[in-house]
Structures are given as C-alpha cells and as structure tokens.
Image (cartoon, rainbow, N blue to C red):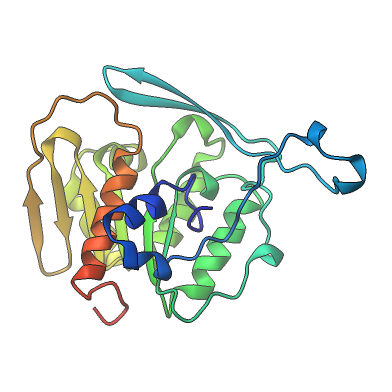
Length: 238
C-alpha cells in the first residue's frame, strides 16, 4: 500500500523502519494484489487492475525514470474510492506522478481539500517532467496544493523546474506566503535548507560515495516526519 498521492510505498515503509509507532498515523488508501490473471478461474475475474510500470536508469548514481501508467490503478482513482479516515490518522503525504493524470490527480487534490483542516499535510512534488503533458495545468495544481500543505519538501531541481530560477530562498518564501508552514529544500550533496516565516536553517550533507539515489528523497521525508513525531510536533497545533 502507499500513502495518498505517493507514487509507491517508499515513504510509509521508510517511516516504519525509522520509527515504528508512526505507522498508526499513516493510513494506506489503496492496495493492489498482483496475481497473474491466467492463474485465476474466469468466474473470479471481475476486472483487471493495471499497476504503474517504472523503468530506472542510473547515470553516475543519479536515477532517471520512465513511467507507463495508462489505465493504471493510481491514475483511475476517483472520489468514490476515498474512505473515511480513522481519527488517529494525523498525517497525510502527497506527491509525485499520481498528482498528474486524471482522474487520479483531481481525486487526490479533493482528498487534500477534505482533510487539510484537521490533519498534517506533507507535499513532495517530486517532479517527473517527462510525465507532464500540461505544464500550465500541473503548475496551477501544485500551487493550490502548496497553499494547503503544512510541510513542503522540495528539491532544488524541482524549484528550478517550477520557477525557472535557482533562488531557493525566494522560492521558499513564496511558498510560505502562499500557505505552507515549513519548507524543506533538499540540495543533494549540498545538504538541506529548512524555512519557516521566522527562521531558516542549513544542514550540510554527510560525504559518502553515491551508489544509487533511488528512494533517497522518500527516505529523507520519512526521517523528517518520524523526527517530528518523536518530538511530538507532527500535529496541526505545532
């Protein structure tokens, strides 16, 4: 399963590995059981669920992705598929390619609208430019989501793609003014910068030999959310 809007279950899985008790605050909306259709009697097959196919190419440790999701489960998510969330679910994470296609993108935006008043909303655009056919429409959606989120985790590459500029501080301030409460900008080997309206903070990265960056952003987000939970700050009041 995956968190609402996340392209695959990396964030909840990593959160569980880092801080087990946080799992009860993260509800998985959609589970896909992958069983070969030919292995099932025809009378048991009501419909076939197609899952997103992801192809990854590593270039000096940096991942480059290609996606194929026509008629996939995440793309076809509609508002009738959205459950009522349990009272102890206090954080939702949205991001990546599931925010792009329809009707799934609009469905997840509707979920954020429904839950933003009472639950912590974390957003990671995690842009995959090759997947975006309507740049203007996508940017309009991202701006609406930023205005509703509490935590915006975004990479320096995503900021450049969105704004056409490399001024990370200006972009963070714009997002804060739009409605985000915390903006965390990841900068690869240059570390991370965090911003609120009153504070900013830089944390350098640890020097390591990069082998594979797949899941690095998701792991960072999971660690950030787990740390907030451990500190008692993963709530709307904080």
